[in-house]
Amino acid sequence: MKDRVFDVFARKERGEPLSHIGYVDAVDAELAKVYAWRTYDEQNWFEMCIVPRTEILPVNRDDGPFASGGGGPGQAE
Amino acid sequence: MDRFTDEELKTRVHDGYVVESVEEMSEGYRKALVVQLTVQADTELISAPAYWRAARHAPSTNTQVSAHAIIQDELAHANIAYRLLEDLGVSKESLVYERAPNEFKHPYGFDQPLDDWAELVVANGFFDRAGITLLGDVHRNTSYGPLKRALVKVDMEETFHLRHGEVWMRRLANAGGEARQMLQRAVDWMFPMTLEWFGLPDELKRHSGQLDFKLKGLTNDELRQVWMDSTVPLCESLGLEVPAHWSDESESYELDYPFPCHYDADRKHWDFDAGEISWDQVFQRWKGRGPMNEWYVESIRASRSRVSAWLDAPPAIPADA
Image (cartoon, rainbow over all chains, first blue to last red; front, top):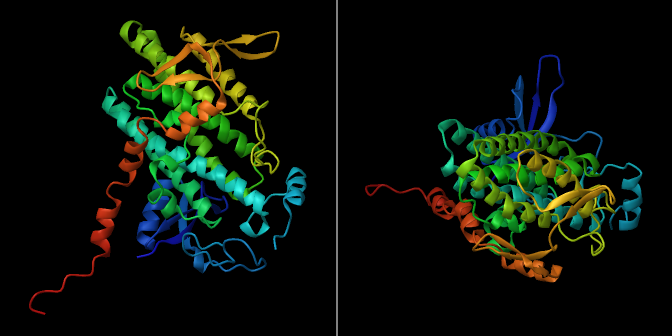
């Protein structure tokens, strides 16, 4: 099975915006949740969620990792 | 065709332009960034087995927990840096699992065995201080947006490693006797080891592009001074001897030994008496890697092929099917 990229979003407290804080590679969403929670443990997050990178649709840019559909490791070229 | 030439991009980043994706890079920028991130990722990765092997010497369950929390952080930092490389088109899989151990780019200091608790806490105090010095400078200055954001977490956690190292150095120093001697022995080989880590002096520095592309802000010699700015007063306050002192005349720290010089890895001994050697000799030693190089790399990936083989094996078909 191939790893996919999952982008990680989180916010520290109620009322704060959700921010992109990083990314993990995982074979499925359940493992990606575990990796995200363990990798980005520098804060006691109020909320954390993950999104498969291929599900992020760029609206106004035609470059960058989201536009290139970089859903898997090493596909950004 | 790249959007910018190397020269155009150098000017732009110094005017405050933040690079956000690989499409905006010139070839020279991308290459310099890949080298920088590979060194960063490999250093974080190899620090994990080095600290893991030494964590056996933790004197209590509490200290076991903090030693292993540091190892967990280092692995997460490595993973983050390799993930950044993926977005530049470099495969994490091949970097971690397909290179020969001597092709890793971590500093020579992390190819040494850490053999007792004092060596582990001095590694936290000295090596992690070097990490903060280098990465803190990158964090403040880098023109690559994704790296700047990723370093927020890394800087925060490295500060904790450093505190762990310094608190324990103080405890061992205050205990006196055997504990203090063990601490001084660790300092004796690890202080020059960390200074060497910062690399070629500015007067010999070949052109790397990292400063031109604003991937960092300070030169090697400046970074060495920043490290000593914290480390020398710390050691002096603990009554530990280090081969460097502040000079009012040059308004900088000066070394009390020939730099660079010969290192005997088996005895963990710097041969100050044999005098200065050339940086080519240092690069030769680095290239040959240190005593733990293979052990550290293999300990990270030993189980990989075996478990993968189980997972990728075709499902067993029952005999009566």
